[in-house]
Image (cartoon, rainbow, N blue to C red; front, side):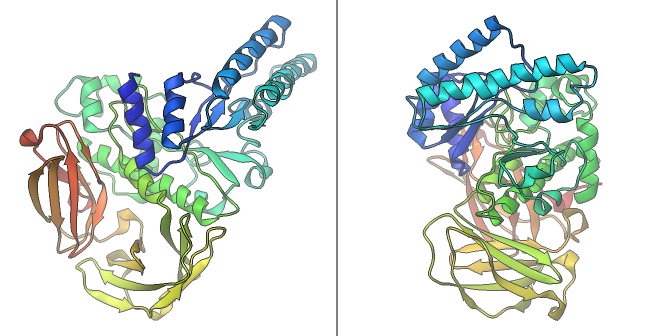
Amino acid sequence: MQPKDREKLLDDALQANMNMLRVWGGGVYEDDLFYDLCDEKGILVWQDFMFACAMYPGDKEFLNNVKNEAVANVKRLRQHPSIALYCGNNENSEGWHRWGWQADKTQAQKEEIWNSYQAVFNGILPKVVDSLHGSISYWESSPKFGRGDKRYQFQGDAHDWWVWHDGYPFEHFEQEVPRFMSEFGFQSYPGYQAIKYFTQEDTIDLSHPSFKSHQKHSRGFAIIKQYMKRDFPVPTKPEDYIYVSQLLQAYGITKGIKAHRGAKPYNMGTLYWQLNDCWPAVSWSSIDGLGNWKALHYKVKQAFENRIIIPFEQNNLLKIKVVDDGPITLGQPMHVVFYDFNGNILHQTPTKSVRTFNEKNQVVYQVDLSEIEFDPKQTYAKILFGDTQGVHYFAKPKDLALGEEGFDMKTNIVSQGVEISLKATTLQKNVFLYTNTPGHFTDNFFDLLPGQEKKIIFLTKDPQSTILQFKTLNALQY
């Protein structure tokens, strides 16, 4: 990766309100520039040693090699204030205890392999960290307990792959929240440009043979479709299918992020798999192989804002939490307005003064839904709290009775690129703007509410040749 690309990637993380990245044990130790930039930009680094998803030898020569490598890297990295944690390995312990790695081994072989594990991860590595960078904690293995161990939810960090690998619905993220989520994810297709790049075609054909080498999960395509059927309309056009796959990924992962943040201080951290791709692929990333933001990255930016509103339904009540990582508020007005998709007000609740807290989250407002007459498929609630607002839908995206697609769009060339002004008279769900011109939209995949005026900028060096196109959930054929 070129220095300018590396800095852009870290700026993209910063713009999405991230304050920590994990250098995964199945990759490489990053170069000095990476850590220099993290220091400069205030991004913390969870640093794995380069061990992942395997068991390792324990002979003297290998252990000496491990020690020398660890010493060299800790001496190099201890200069960087961005280093927040050293982790021995990724999923080695879980793999050994849960994934059947012991099945064909004799008792003597099992003892030898496990003793070798202990020599590296509870011997050499913690001693190196303690002696050379003692102010930083060492963590043996991520996750602390695998998902076959009930303690995963209560101790240490967790990897939650019940969603995706095991087919659990996205609601699982809300039902079992761990103390620190260090890995979870869901795949989507990359952007149109990336697909055209690796297929070398001007049109998109999901049966193109190159997809086989750009999808590294044997069941990946089937899993995406399985989840899409649960929560979203399944389009028939390839371009629409790609678009909805990105909405699906963003819908699921941000559901997890909000559940984690809403459980503060029980949960105090979320790292999802994964930030970026090293080549264009169908993957778990939020930034595709050409460096373009997928829907997930735009939605993560919102989910990681200092203050967010988290509405949820429970026992026929609409309950509202406010997560605030900024300065506390001693009291600001909150009320809720129910609208139909044409912008007509169905119900308004009384205004209440609400206080936020840094150290905990709690329900600060609730609405008894049994007292309100509305159609869940054609209604949304707008929560207004000071200068912050949230929107809640009462049905899954596939069940919403969306009206016709249509909004007014005006463009104006400005110094940064193209300013885009949007306005709709009816709800336009998940507006996705795209163009063949290289550049970046300051916002995308957003809901345009009835009567709302929204301005965004397409940042580009070539505004004159920019031809905008768009998609919405309202207009899909399926």
